[in-house]
Image (cartoon, rainbow, N blue to C red; front, side, top):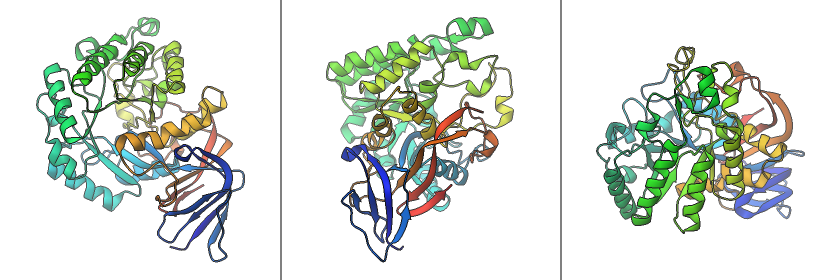
Length: 426
């Protein structure tokens, strides 16, 4: 690869507290050679003038469903890669709710080999916490970690048994693995499909109170004080959960928290008349909850913004609301929808980028999310002001179940580089 110089670009890298106009020099091995306003140039290097654009580290998405093996008709490594790169995402944590479930060494070997052959992005596979995600028996954390597993999650299922959860945390602490929990009490959430409240009553749907989320967070953080491990709450959705998080963080309990871009940008009123593409887990809640989540990011109570990319075929979504599949695609629109929070003055730009790059990289303990010298040149370049409209048929995911069809956004990815190579250009 020939040496490259990205010139006249606004560089925002929270890992270095950098926000300045300058150059990025990429060496022949795809590494950052120098960066910033004092960065040098070379006559022999390939120059790319990016005047008026912004360069940030490639996004790190901590929660996305890939579809392989078993659900290739929804998404596969190739289509997920295309969608991710079009959204400036260069590193993805893939979920284990495939068919079969990723809960053993042979499945891990398969997923890593398949990803290496077919994917064009950095893949960090996650394995299930319990066998078959049934919440009864722990998987072999040590063996799976040694094979390349980055963390453990039962995805949209919660460990209900407190005794089992204490053993999981104790063992996770001993061998230093990351536990990623979906916080929802099964009995309180059973048969529900929407937030409990006025909208659920008007639509005649079974609602779930935010207490179902809060009660699991309270239990797990109580256990965490006794069995300190690397613990991450996948997604929170309510003001009440945030209050619990604030209390525990002020008491010195160490853990991290994520939130879906959907819960930051939409509320239960957006569901309208049974819009099944907005049936999500955790569900969209009140506007007060949404605003509290934004404050949670502002006050460092929430560390990570995720796409919660869940592709579903149209047949699974075009059903009565209660029977429709849960989830929405979102990896391609993650950055643009997040930038909406900057344009409407809800959050500073640096804070948004931090939650999409260096924060998830630190939680995962991976060398990504930064443009420091010597790091891989995984770079997202975008136009901060570019207006566009989300059209499902134009998105690159195999499934088209976007929750934000026809939404007007401001901010568009123009180019994505992976290890110095241009892998997407618009």
